[in-house]
Image 1 (spheres, rainbow, N blue to C red):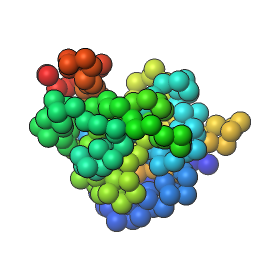
Image 2: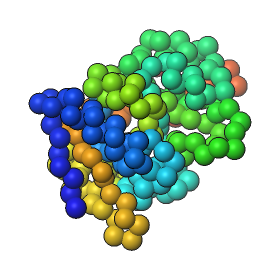
Image 3: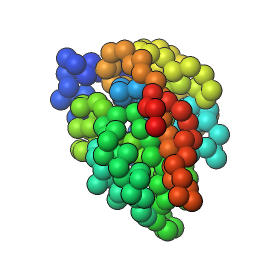
Length: 203
């Protein structure tokens, strides 16, 4: 069953309320961002559904969106000073920073036990949602290796429920066209800034 599209511009509070409730209940939510439409999950189990819907290989990590730098730091073992400077300069915005995770046996969102890629989006409504529920595992709303639709309706059409697992988008938020470029991804290794994926930022 296709979920109702909730118009974020016309009904921002309802969109926030229903998205937060679905995420807390373990659902996958379609959200607008400052770059492209994304699929968001709050829990490791919901993240598994996200991977199924997208057809993404299970060994591929995904980014975690955060409301601010303190939220990002709570997910990391440490933040190298050069990356902290980039976060201060380019957040909120299209910069994903890959940081080392703390050692833990508990399941973590983000698809990688050693590192976590974090980003603070330049999207006020989405940051409100992140403040409400906490960090969200997020990936572009498209089938793996396919182009991301610019509109929520196209994203829903590209990501139907999976008949075998039952994975499905629980709530869909329509934020209008999302036509930005995917974020620049960087990390810090052996005293050097490494650009893992080029993007809109010239670093």
